[in-house]
Length: 475
Image 1 (cartoon, helix red, strand yellow):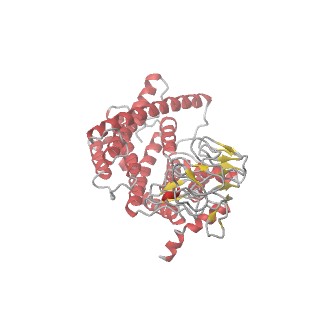
Image 2 (image 1 turned 90 degrees about the vertical axis):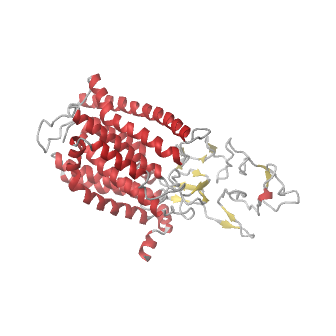
Image 3 (image 1 turned 135 degrees about the horizontal axis):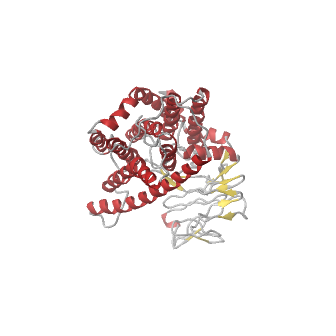
């Protein structure tokens, strides 16, 4: 147990971030014992970087004025220079419209639209590389506690960009672009078998995460460069699980179906997995224990599942009741059989995974039952063909048209399904985060996307005359 606790210690994450060049200002204390170099935003106090805030109380922020010494009898804080405070109690002198104060080391730094100071190349999420500084702001953890992101500098650009790539390999946007390209342009059999094991691994991982309810590494000591996953729990890392199952399955199926170099297929597994796992540490959202458990958990699930993949794929296509069985199992797993309840769980992520597979499995069954699926024209292992210019053009055309259809469909389906389920829940206005709405709209939206992915969009390609001949092979 001590070994596991040590692996879960956030200090290891902090040390890894520092090793990769992520720097945070040193916290200094004045004679009064107040922390400097970090801005903390909580309900009733503000600590300004490089200034002594004194003691701010509920009455210390009043009528929009504040300072850094003790408050007088009227609740105003005395100081030679009064500072404007916005509605959140954040110093807004020389700030932008969002009220973030430029308290970085260089007063000449420019402010972006989110109020983040920058002295180098500014990225989309406000992180600056090469001498840039990102100002801290409040975050909320899965356990409901608030903390703050301290200011930090990214000393080395390369680790940051590698971490961004590793993070992208585990995000929804990657799944909704990578799997469609694989299905429409490469090998639909390899894609759907990989998706089956990926779905199983990811749902089990998400359910385990919500059941164990292990919180994310706190900040401080770590720095949270990625904030949109902080409301989820931590153990196991589902990014690490996705980054393990996908390369393993694709390498296995490539070697089984194609004349493919063994060293290249197997060599991609650790590169992919390590990139994703280290990105979780660099971004400060997981501990070593989280990613280690995620990898081991995935290897065990995959090892148990691999022997039945071929038989299950045949069952999906040929059994007359396979859609009914898959939908019953999926709906039960997303509702009454889900192992955790409460407002603090991230059930929606697990429901998305199951819903899109329910739709995909229905599409696979429809293709076979309607005679759309095609038999392979050659025996395995297949020879890997060199891509031609025609293939590249058609693949790009299919990908662009297909993803546009998926994106538009997702937007429309989500809007109307949220409105419908909000109406059923007697809500005054649509709220997709309401427990009674979230599960319903996700199942409707993503299951239809799954049907479009394997049935509707390939049919559109066929009507347009740009369909790939082997896009719907049986096995």
